[in-house]
Length: 403
Image (cartoon, rainbow, N blue to C red; front, side, top):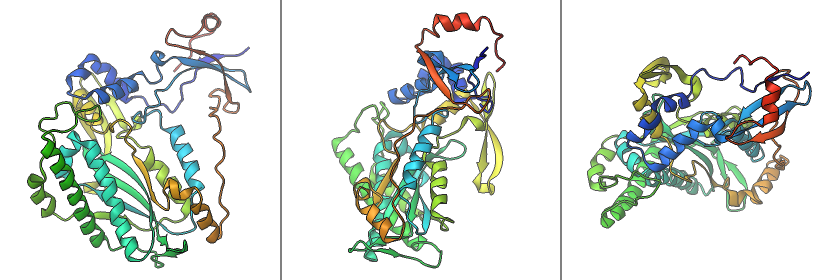
């Protein structure tokens, strides 16, 4: 006789961001969040609950029957990134080249945080454009077309606002004849970091000046779902920011080359679908506060714990909800979608590797949590009204599972 149990994973964290949202309830609307942020938080709150319906699965090996609730599939949800990450990594593996890969980090100074809060799309678009144009400029000086994959992160370990780009860059480029050339063969950094930093700052400030001047001339900032509704005091003018932006040097952080091209994909997989905080980092939730762990990089990455009120925790989390339809992973140069259609395969062949064809996406089939051998096959679905009557009748004959 088959057993009936919940499909809850044994490794599921004890506490979740959704728990804090449930405690706050209607108080969420008092946190001065915009409509898109609220909509996102409500999706996270409903994720894998009866509000989104669910499905009943049977194991094709042991016959175990389990019930699961549907996920929200929101890119900011701590519980919905696994499948997206795996699919993205599979696609990147087909694009690898047998060349050195390097990691660069472009970071914005803290003085721009206020602008990031009120005009995130504008500021983050400028960050992407400035980082790529900086790299492109150095490549063109060598007569080479560069490539880059950039991933936006907006947070620090303590959930503070800390916008920065993680960029993976092949250690060379393509000349005008489509021939690959390494820039460095000694295993060190691609370009001088100090020079990169100065060019990056100049390009960013020039673009910011143009955008802020345009908005100041209009005497307003667009008011849509992507930005805060109280926009009267939004972006400061460039003249107010100019001195602060130039008084301190900007630093482009560079790491040594990766050990192998495949390690690049594994590394990227950890960064591409990260969110501001994972449920695993939440240590405690009580009636008033949330306790979570973080690494203090100012003290060599020492692990610490921070305690915040429910309201402050969600306020900080909401700062990292990206604007609607904003693209947080972008490909440039010979890694762009246009170039990759044909030319990338030719480049791979010229470098002595056989291009890998993208395999059709496989339907996700979770393993049975009972026998851990068989696959779960969906035998019924249901909406927010709950499981079908035949399932409820069957479940009465079994003891309630321990969770």
